[in-house]
Image 1 (tube, one colour):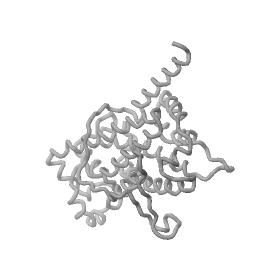
Image 2 (cartoon, rainbow, N blue to C red):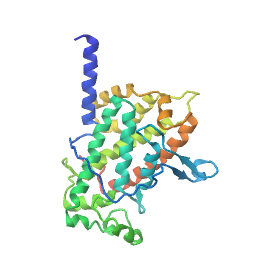
Image 3 (spheres, helix red, strand yellow):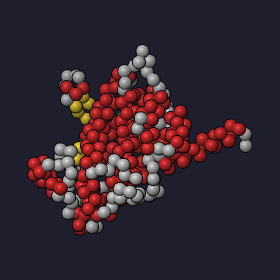
Image 4 (spheres, rainbow, N blue to C red):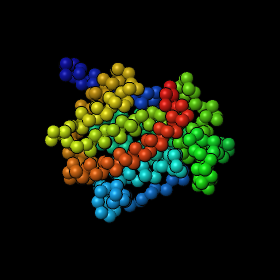
Length: 308
């Protein structure tokens, strides 16, 4: 085997290993199920924001992009459906958002797509836990919203009626936290197959993607737009890299080298210019930020930001 062949084989092995370690502690689950009770916000794949948010007159529309697996309109619809009550996040649209983000990563090529496999295993874990909880009468009672950290009695009273319509243990981030803490499923010193620990790994990855998309929509520096590869590497270094070993960080660098050029992202979100892409991505980033902040608050209030 020549030197080039050996180098190529070594890179492939590194990337495969990266896919298995990307979010730490990946488990090889092969379940294919989904949570119940979630109605997609907009089946026409069109989303409207206020003129104030977009800086234009009248509502703005994002339509589906024909012929593509990833649909930015679907991603936005799931993200906008995720916030619940005053400080909670519905898990079904949250996981559906990840389904679309996985398609986004897979569209960037096989090397970056390897990373998405570990994320898929995480969303599958939470979905399977939700299915298993359906057969548990105690879990189906759901949490008392007054007892969930971060939700006041006033907010709880206001939302009791809505909560009664969604009583599954894994209906939302806070209901999952409440149930798993009360069942003793969360271990603060050892790894467990809990939904809370799994959510934390997804949460960290969401910050990486949020920052990457935010950078893709950045204003040119000295008239120059930096390459997506450089931006993704920078976003990684300030987020997920803080939770990875040296070996995984080096493997990630190899994956980012294969990142497509900026023109590819125009096609991916169905725009013709950087200005148009900025408008679309800023809306996505804003929606991700709302979901991220609510999840961050719930995890922080329950001391879950450092689960092993």
